[in-house]
Image 1 (cartoon, one colour):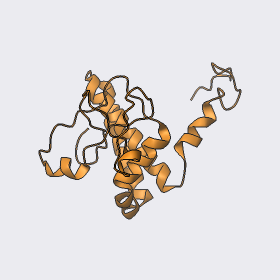
Image 2 (image 1 turned 90 degrees about the vertical axis):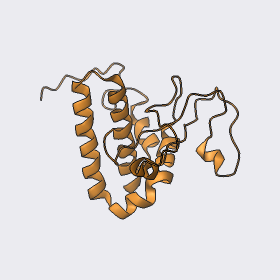
Image 3 (image 1 turned 60 degrees about the vertical axis):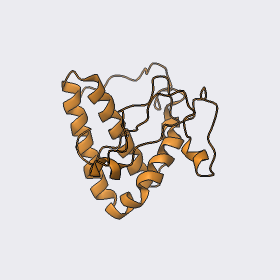
Image 4 (image 1 turned 30 degrees about the vertical axis):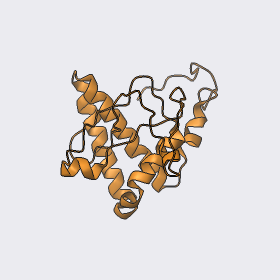
Length: 163
């Protein structure tokens, strides 16, 4: 997570209910912390760029938190959508590739936290690109729910291709 392009989620592990961005817009908060369809509210990129000092921004959600793909894509679009559309798909793709490079560097290191941050950044930029191209990532991911898209087996029974 280096520079202003990071899109990591933030949130402190607390016993208070976690704001659900889909509910928060209507002024409410989801009280059912055990649900798997919640996301932690991110720290604004603007705040991180300007160093606002508005509190911590841990790199990941609390252990056990699960983010639904469709909600994650909607959250990223709500946070960055206007900016991403102004930037355009080509420039956004370049930033995505830069994040993949940061992930590659993190994977060569031994810092687990850095690896997790870079994976989350790559995922955020990937759903951004999908959103800019009108692709529903939950629908796209469903292609793999029955097993390998080619042979339908789990694990894949296709002959291995050697690059």
